[in-house]
Image (cartoon, rainbow, N blue to C red; front, side, top):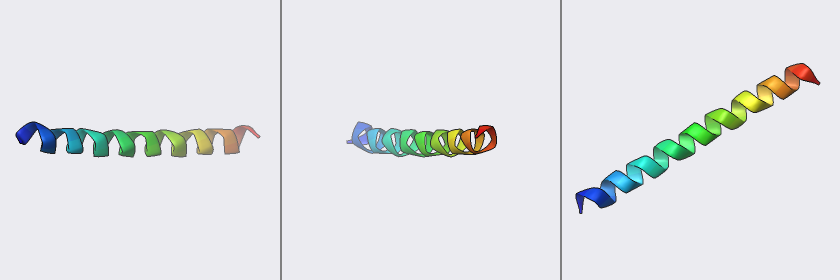
Length: 33
């Protein structure tokens, strides 16, 4: 049961990470082009 909640937390953190990555890429590409 605990591992289930942990898995959900990890998935949410990973999604936030990828969102931040996409934002960074958008910012950099916006500056380059």
